[in-house]
Amino acid sequence: MSTGDSAHAKYNLWESMRGDRALLIVAAFLVLFFVGYPIVTSIRTLEIGSILALFSRDEILPMQNTLLAALLTIPPSIAIAVPMAWLCTRTNMPGRGVVSTLVATSFVLPMLLTSIAYVFLLGPNAGLINVFFRPILGGPLYDIFSFSGVVFIAVLHSYPLIFFTTASGLSRMNPELEESARVCGLSSFQVFFKITVRVILPSVLAGVAFAVAFALTMLSAPLILGNAVGIPFVTTEMYAAIVMNPNPARSVALGIPLLVMTLAALWVQGRLIGKSTERFAVVAGKGQRSDILNLGIWRYPALTLCLLPIVLSLVLPLLTLLAAGLMQYWWKGFVLDNLSFDQFIKILTDPISLGSIWNSVTLSTGVGLLLGFVGAGLTIILSGPQGFTKRFIRGLATLPLGIPHVAAGVLVILAWYGVPFHLGGTVWILAFAYILVMLPYALKTCDAARGQIDASLGEAARVSGCTPLESWRYILFPLMRNGLFTTFVIVFLFVIKEFPLTALVYSANTLTFAVRVFTFYEGGSFEKTGAAAVILTVMTLLAVVIAGKIFKVSVGDMR
Image (cartoon, rainbow, N blue to C red; front, side, top):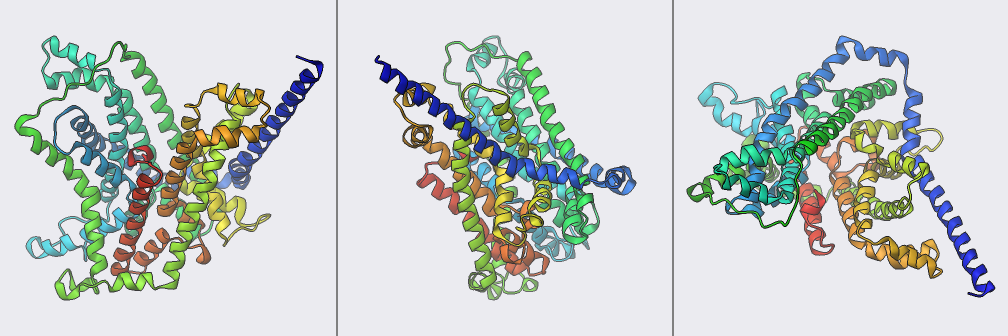
């Protein structure tokens, strides 16, 4: 190589190194601004008196209720999810693919809508089921406005999490273990309990941890079913401390035990999975396709059992909301002369409702596009040798995974609502809020896509004289296209149906359609609530269908 060529190569290498440092500074600034700044601002808001008040009787009761509800959610969720996952992956039960898809679809349905639907069904005075049974029983069959009602709704939204992780563990399991057990004379059910359950235990525990974290941080069910009868939860107390009786210091203080409990659930998950993995390690050899257990005459009874939780979590709520939306007057009941599409027409011609739909769609699209590129950019910048700076940026970017959405709403208000940014009442504060909570998911999704690209491609581009931006444009981004699409769809679906965070941050000018549904419910208009809920559900499911048709992203990818 000539001296000139050598000098040119050194110059390109130096320029590339300078470019990498500049990009790392940009990545650090973005993560510090969207994640670090709100956290620091909230810490500055803490008051000693608010922290000491956490140990008072009035503040301990919400924590007890929150923790107890999360713990009571787990046993029925496991009882539903684990057998269902086994039936869908290890047996010849008919409709296995349909059952899996419906479980994933039920998870997409917002908890806000499920809670409202069961108020329409099991409200003590006007619930359709209780109205039917009142003449027979002399009172309501069941009052959904109760602690057990909150747990029931939590179970309907938690069992899919355990189903997903269990089904994934079963699909990765080495089938030779089960085959060896059968050769030793164990029956199919002995194989399931002595071999299968033990091997997939880490996967089940992963789902349990996610379900606990989900139940700890839920707002919709406690707000609608518990708050109405004076049952306090940490999330509803935080909501009240911002919306009803503004007290930011108390809200931040309440977020501390919620954050601790959420992080503790994830920590316990890691410890249990580590121990279980060591105890029940799979020594993989030459694999073979898993044998499908023939259920014989039990095929359709098994399908019936699998469809029951789906009916309760998806079919029944949707039919109830549709019935409510078709009624002109709730008190007349579901009779032919009381049915029409008037409520749908009113909502779709109402300027406020149309504005909320516009806000939801534009925010979902804008934040989804932005996080698709930001997640891909961060993934590329933070790849390669891991120094302190990269580890710090990655750790801070993934920290919001443990921050409940209600707590994130408080952080956003304290950071950007007033001085010095004055973003309160604008769509920007909502966009920043969504970026805060969804940045970890964007980073992890793009990490998975980046991991499938050989590192030598980037090195080859650099040796060829490409700048980092040219390498991104012509090599990495095109190869990460599926990861970008998946990130966009995940963020879009989250934002368009998000309620807990938005309920704290929105204003009259930034009303989203999910919050619009809640305002209809608070106003006592069951008919408009049902119609608006159906429209929101159609928007959500339509996004899922479009994701599958255009972006080739399935419900399984989004879970």
